[in-house]
Image (cartoon, rainbow, N blue to C red; front, top):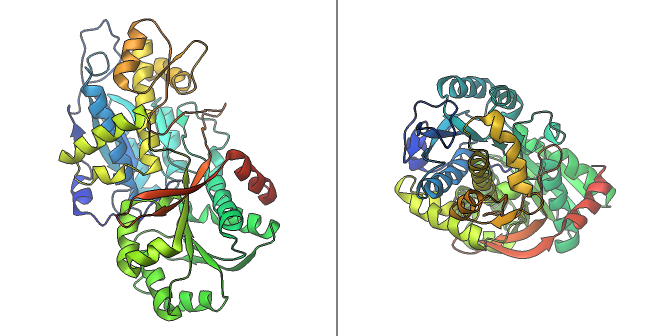
Length: 439
């Protein structure tokens, strides 16, 4: 879930593997607010920072930096400062396992983990769960819809719901009826294909062609020629690395014009916009592209604090401010803040103690006070109140499996690469498509 494209940023590559924050790695272990131990705490970002999916890691790293800044600027977690460190999975299970093992074995001060994308979640979630570390994962795989891992949390819908939302927006909003499916052949991208195909067929649309594209090829002329021969109204796509840019450039060249194309929420990403607009021109992106994104409003006091600290994080990661409208970035930030407030409420750095509180902080309990900033959360907790976090991404609604989801928005880009909301899909509208697709 919430995937991306090639990093395309020298700064992102230079940051891979670096510990960044107002504190370094070290020490750790269990402590309480009455202890004199104020050793730093670490948030691990387990995600691709190199390889075809290298754009995913920076989006998640950009969630950690403003969270750490907000916490540290307000005294830390009862004196413990927080830092962020990248653990590169390369988007491959074979590389993800040793990265996750190194993280949990070498850092006893881990307070939370973010990332764990569809590429590697099946491999790394059991490792992180066994280490008793709360994790906030971007995987959309259906195997986690009814997760048996108590330390697993997901603040985004499964990939199948993302796919159904894409179908709903294509049929109900844009009125397309002939769809070409052009997705990368990686695990995460292919998770969208089956649900989309079933829903489109059930709702009377036609899938003109289904292409699983090998990532990072210098040309897709053969594939584009085959697709154009089916005469689709629209292309559904998520293809990582430079793939979408290369493919769409050849569509424009061979067809004489750009065909309308629609993307998953992963295509709302600064790196993707730069690559695709560079390949086909900004005017074509503005005129021909729409996407579905997570149902966030990019407003409110929680978002304001997030954006303020995100912009201030440019001194640590130059591209950080560009992720102010990346849904995954907002939601991971919220997850980190929920974990921090859970620690404050339990007065413990022992994850077996504070992990159960994460859900309560996210959903709220009877009599809980809504808080939008870390400072207000700590103040409420110190006055004896329970809190509910409503942050950058809005309200959380964890179910019994620690999955939370909201509605969707239909979006376009403006000329500067900012997201522009043009319509909404409610949970009920998406549910109708889900039912049609057998989900």
